[in-house]
Image (cartoon, rainbow, N blue to C red; front, side, top):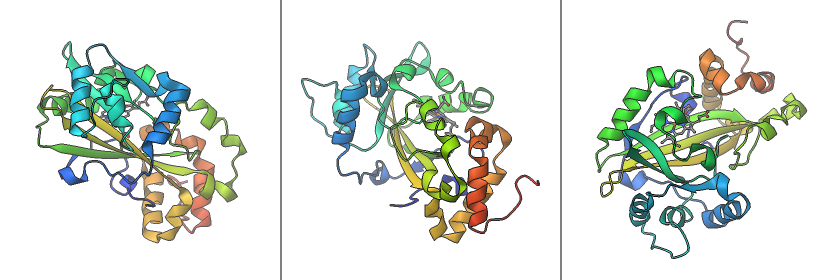
Length: 272
Ligand code: HEM
């Protein structure tokens, strides 16, 4: 479905933004064959898309049970579970007083890899996110600590990228293509990349399951709906400087501005 999620319409800054959802809305499904996509990535780049720590098998098995996936002799339980769903699955467990990534299947990364994040704490994971330690860390830790078993939380984020691929572990090869892009075709070549994330408790082992699902739509898909286009233009122009710098928006500014002007969104950029 095109533009299923429009988080830019709801807020322009970094936010925790976790909201409860009904259990029947947990994972959105709809991908015909996630197994084929994930198996191909696993065969080609195992360390980028899969990782587990030594003591994580009980938590992994709880996730497999939650998804109704039977144990397989030849596969870690979290991997067997992740192959059956469109979403990436990340097991978070509290060890040495900190919530850490203890196992993950990560097939749609936005510029990070399983190898890089395995074992990292919430603080370490979010080191590059401007202001995270000051504004969010304490609250996010508390959310992990206090998660009730019956509660499922959802958050969404967004960025702009010049790639329609869901598997983008590294930014450099993507960004190297930017100089070749032209304003006239920016609506086709630039994508709004939305991550829908969910978080829930694993009551048996005490861990938490974090899921990530990526949705990609070309900028052109905004032109079907003038209200969406206007909301996007506002978000693009009004996002705080920190947020824009973190997401590399200056790299895309002439292209996005050209696209917006070509479609009648002619307001000035930050008063200039
Ligand atoms: C559930 C609570 C969480 C909150 C509120 C949160 C919040 C954020 C925020 C605000 C960002 C900046 C991009 C954006 O706008 O989303 C971010 C980036 C990121 N988050 Fe989280 N996050 C959470 C959980 C996690 C977990 C469990 C992981 C485990 C892998 C994770 C991994 C990352 C990574 C790898 C980035 C990119 C950092 C970079 O630029 O290198 N986050 N997160």
